[in-house]
Length: 282
Image (tube, rainbow, N blue to C red; front, top):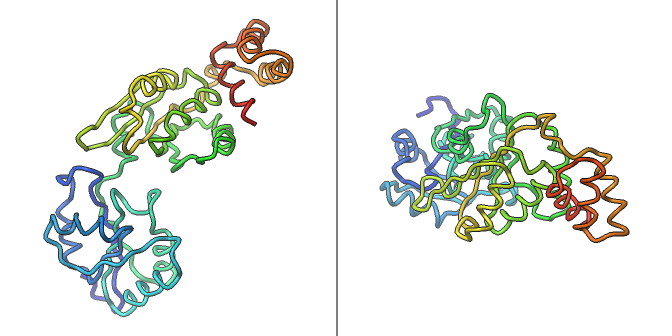
């Protein structure tokens, strides 16, 4: 593979569900390297066995001790070729590998991608949202207050927003998106891409939330969310309206406070209600 003294680190994409998406070059590369670094050796062994790839595997995570990446760098420096794979999809895209690649680069070791499946790109390709510019944010924070804060920071981002979300948090995340980003933002949810129960939901953020709440099956599996970017016309709740709502909540029940604020400001009552929920959580 690599005729130079040091080996090459190959970043190899693997299927995100359908094994038919394994590209021939990935199979050839995995068959030729000296060792394969994996997120979970037991999980990856099933994939490798399916393609009759018999190579030693070692566990690798960015949060493991430095000895793990150090051993791989030593092997690369000695001339061994190494492949890095994740449990599914393209390594480093919200998956381990950053520290290993950075260290290899700093040591002058060649790092080569073997492209293939990526849940982010697959979802964007069918979302019907602008893709000339997009912002991938990985996973939003699990804690409600931190998630709300992150969404507020992203509220005026004009690019399409893309994130992964855990199935047990998808409803809460969509509720927070309605409250912070607004109910009318275009939204798209991809679930179990390329797998047996592959589904796609689209509409506004509020409409996608309704679909998820109405069908518990939509709260299972691997999920990618894509949200349309900010436009001035979408910002239907002003800063003044939020201040008024905050003051009224000190004296009135949430539903009444949202209704009165809507009458005063002309804002959307449902959106104000969701914002009120987020204010009460603080």
